[in-house]
Image (cartoon, rainbow, N blue to C red):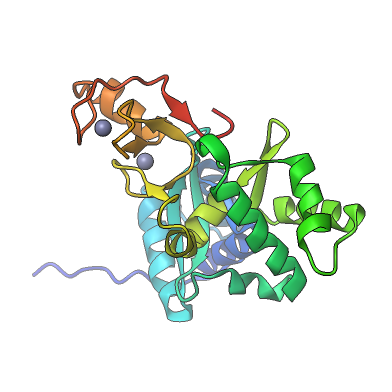
Length: 247
Ligand SMILES: [Zn+2]
Ligand SMILES: [Zn+2]
């Protein structure tokens, strides 16, 4: 009778979790590099299948309400790994690093980004700075707002592209539920991967809400050679019909 090997938890797993905790989000290639370095250090033969290793780590993390999620960056298509809290899908989880005013500013900023005109899902840096003075009570100075924005970028909640702030891959992944609850009209899912989408391609038919990430469209229409039509309304799909800042 075949017995299934029970993966043992060792220093390799422990060290990898520590690395994930300090980075929060890594590209898959970075993750693999770290895994190989750790294996060398702990003198363990790396598993052939990195995904399997991630599965073992992710499974164990469930005990502490964490998991490893995989996503692709909307603009670059690069695969990312993130350590995500499975218990809290709210901005409150930022409370460890920020006070009430800072979180209030972040919520306001998110609302401006999500409701921006023409589905740009972005805010110009200058407008983000002015927001601190105009909409916060008491108003935040330009310097305070500037360093707070820098902090949000450093922590991976925001990304800067072409002089604008956009929601980061981390925010889309960790606060996806919050975004969908608060902004059901504005927050859409990619029809291919079902992840939140704030930049990508959209159906030419203005009455149709279908959207796809660049990398999902690439997979569907280029690699899998599916007929280039909207999967819902069958309008011809034009890959140049994009939305969202940075594309
Ligand atoms: Zn997608
Ligand atoms: Zn359509």
